[in-house]
Length: 160
Length: 118
Picture 1 (cartoon, rainbow over the protein chains, first blue to last red):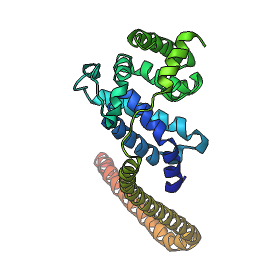
Picture 2: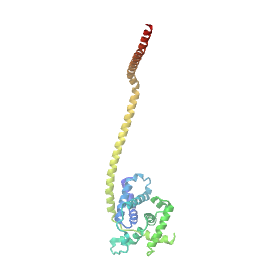
Picture 3: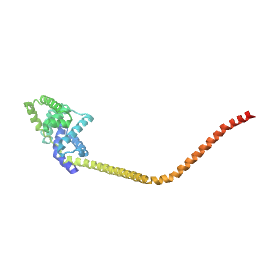
Picture 4: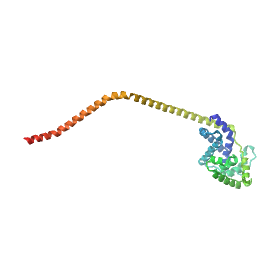
């Protein structure tokens, strides 16, 4: 796969990648964008290892998930997103405030639960695909999704 | 699909956060990809150079081997007289040393016999 093909595929799946990483980073868009950049560069370097271009999206998500996990080990969170809960804004430019409750709820989940829930509910992957991306068995993914859903239900009870 | 699952799916399915400009993101990515390309090119040149060196070394080894194999009869002809000369010299030296020690052993015995006869 050459550079043009890679850019074409990247453009096609960029929105999904950034949305997933924004959810995993609980709304920290700067960090999510940095992780998206790092993930795409890693993907570009390893592009020769991808045999089937059809599997580009899950392959890229797996790289993004690994990059996210590695970044969590390296960086200590400075301030919890919980502190932003309840802040109201009328500025349309700052639309991310719309999701503060959701980000705060996602922040309470473990990385595994958050990733499973994000990939399953937001990105629409099947249990089997999520299992392949995060490298665990489908039964474990089902458990993570179940626990994540329970936690989200408790935290987001006002919305449900 | 139970009710709980449906509700979570409704909330998360509508998740569409605002993102910064895609053009800026891609421009930044392409700048970083340029750097990766430079490094990739350098690695490719280095690999090509190493491969060439290995091929040259292998060909040289084969060539020298063939030449030496072909030259074996000639080499033997050149070396043979030297080996023969060395062997003869070694035998001569061995015989001389052997004779010397034999003389040293036999001389006292001869003297003793002479004394007894007297």
